[in-house]
Amino acid sequence: MSFLFSTPVTAMINLDDAATRPKVTVKYKKGSSEELFRFSNHDNIRGTVTFAPKDGKRVEHIGIRVQLIGQIETPADHGSHFEFTSLQVTLSEAGAIEGNGVTLPFEFLNADLVNESYNGTGVRLRYYLLATMLRGGFSSNVTKEMDIWVVNYDKPPQMNNTIKMEVGIEECLHIEFEYNKSKYHLKDVIIGKVYFLLVRLRIKHMELCLIKRETYGQPPNMVTESDTLTKFEIMDGAPVRGESIPVRLFLDQFDLTPTYRDVQSRFSVKYYLNLVLIDEDDRRYFKQQEITLWRRPPHRAAKAAAASAAAATTTTTTTTTPAEESQK
Image 1 (spheres, helix red, strand yellow):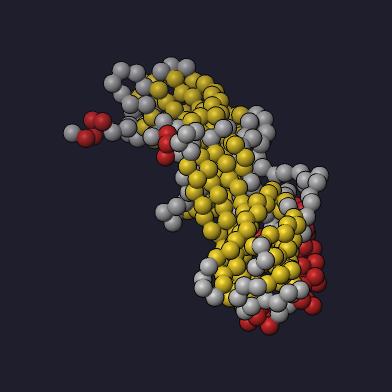
Image 2: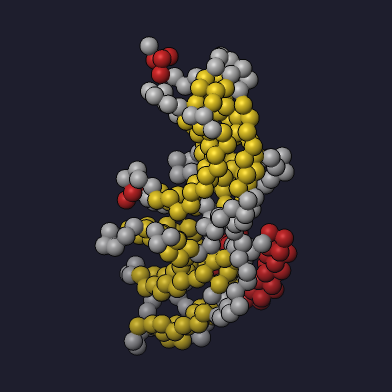
């Protein structure tokens, strides 16, 4: 008897510019992926919604509408997701469809898409179109969803100072590390150096880690998830006083997002460079430094990345050590 409860209507959403609008391949935690249409803040979203009876027979409804919904999903929500955007357009009042059904146009002009889409470890920020044909009585509403992906671009930071710090252990270890900037676009190159001022520990090797830290929830139940995106050795063997170790990290090889700070008072995503020294007794000494990531407009990103890569190559050609060469 399950056919009595089946939906007798098919639904479809089509975008007017589907043939030309860029797409983004979105990866999910379980390994699956899909292509979604890409939008940016204040874009116009235009399309059509089609509802058609499966058998061509008459189907009555009490209205047809389409919504643009933005929501944040976290494990703490327990299925009750937080909606930060909900726009609605009524396409039809009560009536009926039959035969080939009905196709209705919709549009959301200058859409408010200020927050980027995001799929993280414990957080998902999602935008989607929801078309609904409302049915009265005991009949179920007919719905159709279409996810879209929002990518926004930032202006270059007005100030971008170098990061330079001295750290150490009294009378045992004293080092100075420096990174060329504190804010990097997603296709940038991190260039730096580590300078040893005092070395009285038997250092075995040194690593650099890029860490993403995702924080979500409300106090006092906030949760922080850390993910080490890369970890690689930048020095092998004991350094001596006065030695300088170069650092070079190309960011475009990683799946990064911009830094997000307190999005809708629900979550943040921050990035850190973690410098780790390991001695001969496998004791670890580390210093962590936050960096800010931002998204550069695509028409400038390719040229800038190429220039940064060329500059990085020129800067480090004369300081490459044999140990580094063996790691390439």
